[in-house]
Image 1 (cartoon, one colour):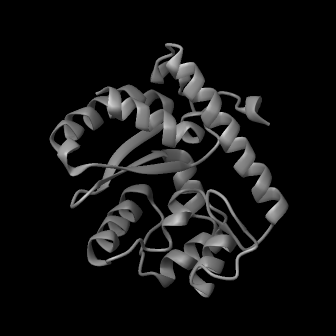
Image 2 (cartoon, rainbow, N blue to C red; image 1 turned 180 degrees about the vertical axis):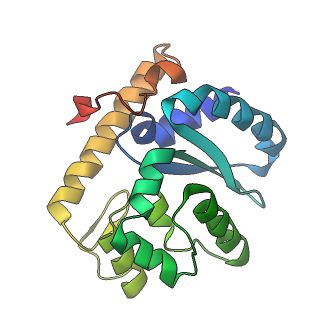
Length: 192
């Protein structure tokens, strides 16, 4: 499914490059039947790279979540992150349980649960700021709204954008997703 490959490169390059915990993107509901099979195949291929793909939401536009298993659990277990999760009703920071709770919250809510930023690797202070201020009063915006270290965030945003551009260029030149996907143990300093 070439469209899914394009989405993976366009929206998930920093995760594929092991620079970011996770990314997500939406697909039209019309893609859903083929998406189930594609995701199963990608999960088999990506297992050795430490990446999983799952559907967070299926109604309306499908929401595909692409994440690094080890990085996700590490992020969610940070004390500041887990305090936010507990305040939102999460009982665990373990991958499967936390994702299950996130899926339920997405189903029940008419909007994105704000703690989703923790699942994407955003700094807990910025997630807390977004929740506290309702998305207002931020210092800058890029991949997320920044309430903490603006300078560090701008560097991260630039690094992610360099990665995305490089991955799109390489993919369009014929590199496969598997060639572009860094194993969890490989060095990832190329986009500094």
